[in-house]
Image (tube, rainbow, N blue to C red; front, side):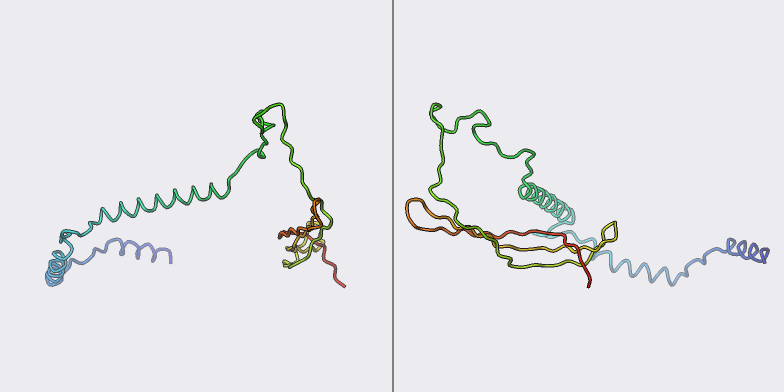
Length: 172
């Protein structure tokens, strides 16, 4: 069996491709002659050459990439340190160094509460110790009611807050 494979491989290696016929050569030359003038036409006045299109596209892609990088940097706005107040920097907040600027609030908080607006549970996950837990995204409406010192007027301040909690799951 092995000897037959060796003979077969030798016969395949000895094969040479057949030369194309004169008729095939003539048909190919005619087809190429018809296509050649259409491809070789130069752009007319106002036309755009292929090189200009490639460079224009490349330039547009580079400008877009730079704009995207700047947008990401502006959105992230990474700061290694928390912002400092004027006194921490050694700069006086008031023009006159002898007086310190005081900020007094003429109101006092009288009530604070949070209202659960929505909850979205995730699938059940298992911790390394095998206990099942579920991640729940909670959305709260925090409300504070302030009373002004000068009058009996009350101000209500509300803001939305998102919170994620991991809760152990118990089956019954």
